[in-house]
Image 1: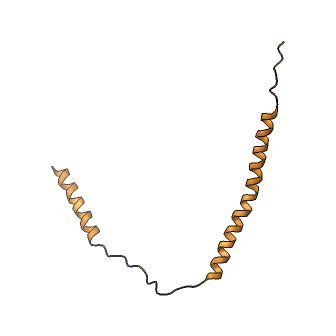
Image 2: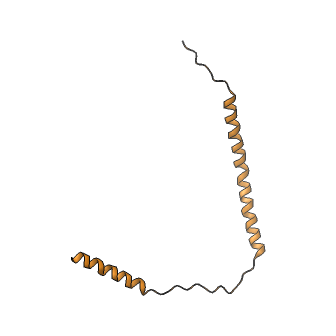
Image 3: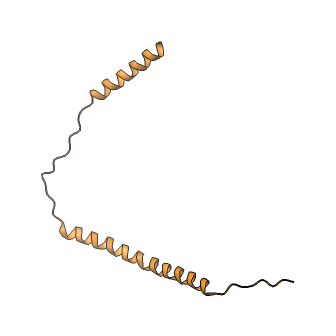
Length: 82
């Protein structure tokens, strides 16, 4: 009986605490920042990084596929019995 009363008292205390907290207000967004050139430079740099990373990935993928094709062309070797 005491544990259920303690549990409900703890729950009530938590609810009251959450109800008394202040609201959070967002900052004013009345200023408009125009930086078209900066955004374009940043996006261009990101695209450049992606392209530079794709080149070695495509070369590696081509090498892997070429290696798989060579293994399928070889005839299976026979084991010589003694």
